[in-house]
Image (cartoon, rainbow over all chains, first blue to last red; front, side):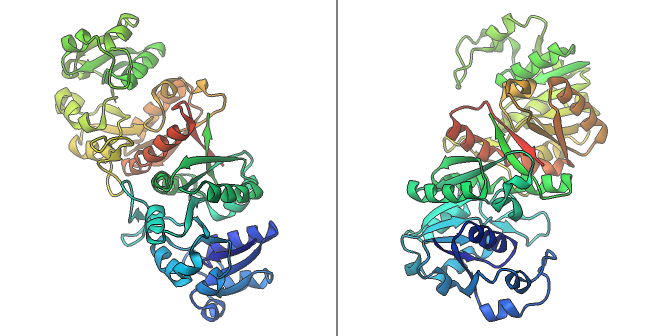
Amino acid sequence: MDIAVLGTGMVGQALAGGLTRLGHSVTVGTRDPGATLARTEPDGMGNPPFAAWHAEHADVALATYADAAAGAELVVLAGNGSAALDMLTAAGAEALDGVVLLDISNPLDFSAGFPPSLFVKDTDSLGERIQASFPGLRVVKSLNTLTAPLMVDPSLLGEPSTVFVSGDDPAAKALVTEILTGFGHTDVIDLGGIETARGTEMLLPLWLRTMGALGTGMFNFRVVR
Amino acid sequence: MDIAVLGTGMVGQALAGGLTRLGHSVTVGTRDPGATLARTEPDGMGNPPFAAWHAEHADVALATYADAAAGAELVVLAGNGSAALDMLTAAGAEALDGVVLLDISNPLDFSAGFPPSLFVKDTDSLGERIQASFPGLRVVKSLNTLTAPLMVDPSLLGEPSTVFVSGDDPAAKALVTEILTGFGHTDVIDLGGIETARGTEMLLPLWLRTMGALGTGMFNFRVVR
């Protein structure tokens, strides 16, 4: 499948690599490919620049948001929540019409430092805002509840854990669930419509504090029942 | 230990029963004991009235909030979040001075129907409001992330799961953790100060939607790491 991954950070790299390993043809989208490749500094979290990752993943193309999205059957939103709507606008509403969007973004607001708060929550969600802004997109919120390496390889944990899908389009959720299964996720809970993204986005405050308590982000929640 | 459980609903009944089984001396606190025992109708969730439960738990005393709290070493807040501050005010700030409070309440707002939203979140929490309103209380937020029967008997699930504690007083958290261990909880994560209650209280929107997807509240989150 032709897949566009919007975002060049940890989540974008993990998804692009994971989807390539599953045999998909992946183009990473960014605002300015030249600028992205020219950056030689680690990002704010100390991760290596995209160019270093890309040098080891030559099978992944790099293009503008619009060029990456053009013709993609699936678009993965792997950028910061604060940039989500701008990234999709740059990709182009027409190109996104009818396309499935795997939305991994979280509405994190770092303006008051760490831990971040959420700039939308409780009676609305970023997933819903994206769906409302791009009615032609088939938005599926998923994978926003665990750290990037575990998104594409949950077997890094010794025990099975849970991921969630939220969205209004059953066929879009089925496509995303197939990809999740390909990554090794054995427990995918369909929470319902895109409104249920409120639940997984509001898990972030607990995720962040659990990371603080454990001293690592290498954990995931499992729904034991 | 002399323990007061404030609240006569499902959570209050579960905690009073569970703490009695651990050998503690439990008094359930309510606004008006006579009125509580006179109610013969099920509650809004279809649960039997308190009197029916009390008839089978004669070793649990029933008293006013103030009489229950007087002399208690541990107070359990097992009422609705919207009533939490009023219940503690009725118990009396003097009686609560230096006492450990196990705060199970959640800031659920049902004014717009189901699922409820949260009347405090993200940059504040009900746990913090309680601690700020009653500085002499040693507040520990815990057990607000799972259904009442599992709070006191997590072995009802076939696999171990996780509970959290948040609070500013290490000795108070140690006391609560000892009780959690007594109930059978094998994985208790200390998230840090009472500020971290924001995390567990904001899990409720996901808890509610997971309950909707599974069709049961008999589940709990496990932190797999």
